[in-house]
Image 1 (tube, each protein chain N blue to C red):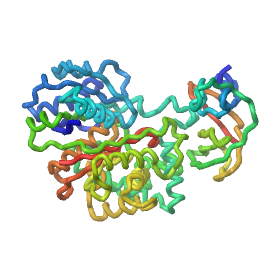
Image 2: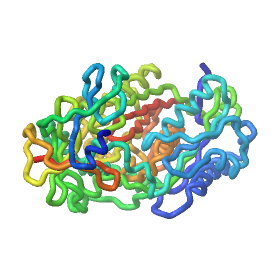
Image 3: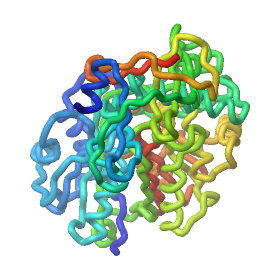
Image 4: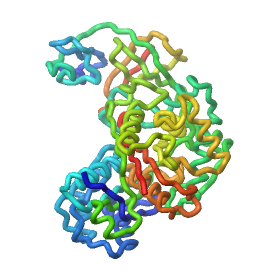
Amino acid sequence: MSKVGIIAYGTSPFTKEDHKIESMLHKSTNDLFQKNPDINKNEIDAVLVSTNNNSKYLSPVLSEMAGIQPKIAHSIESLCNSGTNSIVSAFSYISSGLADMVLVTGAERYDSPGQILEWDNSRGEFKHPIFWASIFSKSYKQKYGISDEQLAIVSVKNHKQAKENPNALSKKTYTVEDIMNSKKLTDDLKLLNCSRPCTGSASILLASKEVAEKYTDMPIWITGIGQKTTSAGFTKNTSLTSMESTVIAGQSALKMSNHNISEIDVAEVHDAFSVCEPMILESLGFTNPGEGINMSQKLHEENNFMINPRGGLIGSGHPLGATGISQTIEIVQQLQKTAGNRQINNPKTGLIHNMSAAATSSTVLVLEK
Amino acid sequence: MNFEEKLSKGQFYIPECLVCKKIIWPPSEFCDKCNGKTSLKKEEIEGKIIEFSKQNENYFCLVEFCNSIKLMAKMTSSPKKNQIVKISKCGIVNGSYFFQII
């Protein structure tokens, strides 16, 4: 199996602006080519588009706009983890020998239809994600004796970190009091506990070892992949305080990369809501059950950007199809030591966790220099 | 008559496999275990509140029925965890199911 490396990336700012999806896809793709003018577009074998947008034929559309005539061109949709699903598909094309270079571009608009899973009628009239997030929050707080103020620290930390990310939606810092005093959505969820849908795009270029080393002396290798889908419907979750799909995907990715969780230096995790960050940290094995919030709090107090350095989804915004790709770009920048004010001290191994629909599906990637 | 036709008339039927008798939730034409055809049975069922929260004046609860049907339902009075409840109202509005429990 050929090694697969990430050799280039591009991104757009994440905003609340109204742009066509085609324009957004082109924006980050163009940024990638502007930053890497030596890339020969004729060598791109596949163009994969990650989005929940209803527009059709987006991969051929993007290919035409970007001046690429790939062998393989199609879209990938899997709600919020469309981005890392697309990266896994690109990895598979390359490692199987079907492609040597694959462009993956994800984009979403602020009004994405992917925010609501219409099929999941077992949620009754409570289909918006704030309802499963409220149920998770209530259960988690009760089981481990955690307060709303403690959960608010996740939002405080991730908005603070997003301030160092020029492409992030959030430009402000907040206190615990600000989070607690923000609009009450339910008894267990305030507005600032939530990531926000937005408009944004992100692109990466993956290549086989031979091609990667031709273009860059700093390729970042994908050494671990784990995925698990337990169901589609929220009500099928067997636990409301841990994430089964994340546990399994994390173990698979670490096993493939021959690492254990203590060797991960930096991670982007899918903090769609405040409660998700500690649940994910526990499900991945960074901490024991019930102690994830202590890890987030300690990192915040020490100003350590190890978890969600770009600001996570809460700080960066959540353009669904672009999120997993943007998370991956952050870990690439961290490992290449080009993350500016967000830079972690000398990371060697990084992890991306991206999930969908109340953690019914998770993807975990491990990246290394 | 299928599950949604019954539900749109305010009637909650239990979808069950004709072959292996497994309750299939969410409702589907075929069994996810033995691939057999499913049918509907009418039965008075009681559920247990697993978790709940509140938005404005209404509570929303995750409820389990028959150890296999889990759904989100509205409750107007104050719920308790593990409280035994029944479906008092159900239907379809704008293509979405709704359930209310007492």
